[in-house]
Image 1 (cartoon, rainbow, N blue to C red):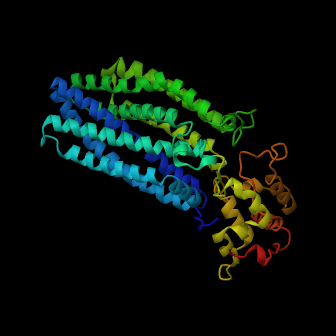
Image 2: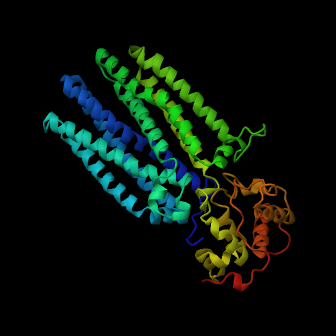
Image 3: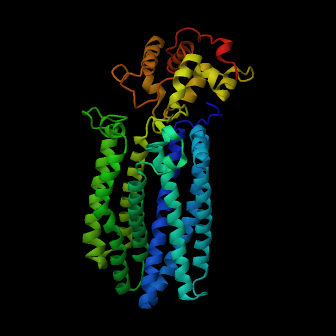
Length: 457
C-alpha cells in the first residue's frame, strides 16, 4: 500500500513469480547438487586414474556451466525483479530483516560463479590435484548459498520467535530451518543425478555408459530412503493451521475436504514412488536399456515432483507472505485494526496519493481492490473476480465484504485463507460498488469518500 502496484492481466503477478521461481529452483538445485556430483565424481576419477570419467566430466561440466551460470543467474535476477513489483512490502521486509544474511549470500554467490568459470576453463591447464580442489571449493560455496537462502525461505512459513524479538537470528534459525535444509539437500542430490543421467545416456562407449548410468541412479536413493523421515519432521514443525490447510484447502473439489493441496500432495507421493521404482528397476538394475529419451522423461517426472512440492510450500503460507506477520497483500497483521478504523486510503501512502490526486481521478474502490485483492485475484483471468462475484448485486457484495472483516472463523469461513478486509465502512461500500460493477450489477453511483479519508500523511 506504500508502493506503486503492478497490474498483470489474466495471469496475475503471483503466477509471474511462480513461473520464474519454479524454473530457477530447477536450475539452482542443480547448481548445488551438481557441484557435489562433480566433486565426488572427480574424486573417484582422481583415485582410480579413470580417464573415461575425466572425459565425461569435461563434457558434463560444460552443460553444468551453461545451465547454472547463464540460465540460473538470469532467472535469479528475474525473481528479484518480479517479487519487487508484485510484493514490494514483503520484499522490503525480507531485505530489512536479513540484510547481513543477504550480503553473505551475495559474497558466496559471486565466489560460486567465479569458481565455476575457473573450474571449467582450467581443464587440462592445471594439475589434477588443483582441479579437484576447485571442484571442492565450488561445492562448499554453493552449499553455503543454500545454507543462507534456506534460512530466509523457511522463515517465511515459520518465523518462530522472530515475531516477538525481531532478531534476525531468531528468524533465520527458525523451527523448520534444519529439516528444510536436509530436505533441500536430498532433493538437490536427486536432481543432480537426474541431470547427470541425461548426459550419461549419450556416452558412446556402451560399457562406460552402463557404469555411469548406474552411478547416477545411486544419487536418487538417499532422498527416497531419508525423504519421508525428514518430511515428517518438517511437517511437525510448521503451524498446525497450515497443515490443516492441506485438507481443508484454499480451493476444494466439492468432494468432502479433498482440497487441491491434498491432491497435489498425493500426486507428489505417487510420482515419488514411481521414480524410486523406476530408478531401481531401470537405470540401476538395467543400465544398458536406459536411453536418452527415457532419461528426459525421467527428469521431467522428477522436476514435476519438485515443482509440485514447491507450489504446495508456497500455498501453505496463505494468506500470509510472512506467516502470522504480513498478509499476502502487504498489510501487516498488527496494522489491520488501525487501518479498519482510520481507513485504508488514509494509511497507505501510495494508495492514498493515487485516490486523491486530481490528475489520476482513480476510483477508490478499484484502488482498494488492486491493493487488497489483486495479490491473489485478477479481474477476468486467474481466480477471476468476475466469476467469483457472479450474479451478486451490490448489496450482496457488501454483505460478503462485511463477512471478510470478521475475525471469528464461525462467522467468516474464509478466515485463515484470505486476508481480512482492512477498510472502513465507506471504503467497503466503494469496493463493493466497483466489484458489483464488473458484471454490471452496481447500484447507482459510487459512494463518496470524505477528503479526510484520503489525506496523505
